Length: 370
Image (cartoon, rainbow, N blue to C red):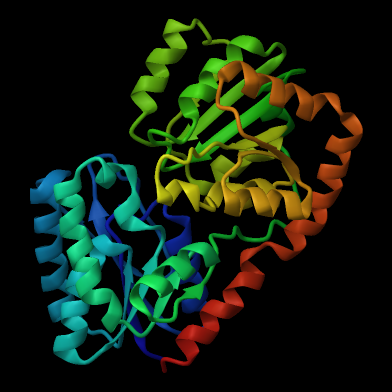
């Protein structure tokens, strides 16, 4: 079977979408080589296929992206490849150049509206550079994937090329096994809220989630993952004296993360509509909550809100005032009949909204490339 060389800009450890794609294609008989970078804090990685992580002197800014692009180009130049898979715009340019030079097939997987992320919309000069790269390459691509139909339609309208949709759906958990000892340690007899993810950044509702805990009794909040507001959240917890109610934990291996998710009582997804990327988001965490059969509390972003409403698996809110958010939490728990209905509906949702079902589309795309 052909060799697929997969490129990402992260350290490979916590990127569940890329891992699911690589695992699925590897099981289909493709030879996989996964390329990323290595940080000082990177955990060891063990996969059933080849991985390669580049150590870079620079970790952010222009020099980081320039160095990464050059290093990735050189790696792709000399490695055996049949199909190239570029994940997100920050890996696309070297993959595109190599695909043209060697006449290889290229797949582009856009995990978000890259040029609309907050880190770029507030830096218009840098945003313009990434837009020019996208505008130059995107119309020339033949195999494009993204994470939901709304984002696919935006790209199709803008660049007049077809885009496939493969959602960030979690693997099926056939049997739930909540850790009773962990539950006793983390929450005891209290209700537990969880906000998880590797991109808990500005405008994703984490600050308001911490503040709302002032108005909730017999409830704890666990924030698990990483992001650019983590240090601010820790300071906020100290300032508000919420150490007994709010617990912030850094990135965990996926299995360890799901141990916390399974004992939670409400899973949070709190993106604001400050940019198009968050407006049309459908985060991985939503499907983790579904597989762990945890009712959801989500902000009224159109894609995720529709998913929750259509399946009747949680509550949607509009008001980011911390006191109003706390009232939403109270409503979720007070109506015990509705909460029980959410739990029952999650059993069925978990059977259909899982990677085993979603991956059939992925397999079809790559089978057609051979």
